[in-house]
Image: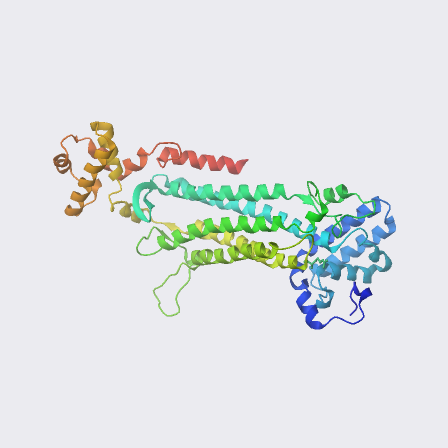
Length: 459
Ligand code: ARG
């Protein structure tokens, strides 16, 4: 098969080279972007008098046919065509003849791939933003009935202070909101057109880059062609943004794994999103959150992979850059299915407030409240209050009870300045609702947070 660039070559390329060099097996995913880019380019060439309107017509009709052939799986992808750009141009020329050969005027595959891939990534940024918003909505719906549902807040995975379940969920809403903002800012930063940069230095043809930029939905044209054809920051950014998002998902997944264990029993995943064991008939395994946690590893790998590809490249385009696509495709696909299944798993799981409450009754969660009481009601300096509370906790331990269940007499013996109203301060409910500072867990503060995220989704 003759290569498009074979003019200066005297022998055929080896088939091993063809296999090694080709990207057509994976870059065909960009076919819609590639065809749209070509049509925009042809329209601009016509507007500038470089193509006549008859040629443009033929290119448009021919491209519509190519698109249809690919969409209906009738297109013949051949490894010898190297990449989708050449495969599509070649097929176009087969269909329309001479006019097809003029399409590549004032263009190179270097700006062509840059425009295709950039548009793909920008589109995926927008899709991920919508999916993240849908996930936040699920968290809000889950949270609303649980602003009074107590569970132990933890540090070091040890019982720390009581919080409510909605407050815990809104912590994740905050993370996912930041993720959205990262996708948005990356979208804005990278929303410019590479088309017209040609191989690296621009072109002597009288082109109109703004016209193609506008037609393809870009905000503006790129500033420096040498940079543009070798710039893959947009790809690195989506890989990083997906990595951070998956890191958040993975943290939530870890909690779901813990929470669905017999040790916690805070939630039960629906049967539709759980799996069984091939040997132990009683088992119900949280494969979904486990895989979410596990898949985070591969998206981190894709990020490090591309950073490493890019780090030593001299300007401008180098074939190394062809390695940019598979990792991005993989991370995007992983992120999209992960967001979808997490949303489903969350909205179908059963919440078990009774076990959350039970867990609040071990570990003396209201110890800080006793110390705060001693400061606020008995005028005791915090350090001393801390010490007295420590003694109360030790006493509770020897009695085999939780501090929240200690009787007044026992407390009074520990420190006689303690008055009977202390009992109001020791309950788990009180402890949670006492944390009324901005952003705190008190039910009213949690409700504010829910409203905040609801309003955010409305904008
Ligand atoms: N398949 C190539 C890639 O994905 C397209 C650009 C090729 N350019 C070149 N000068 N060989 O990067």
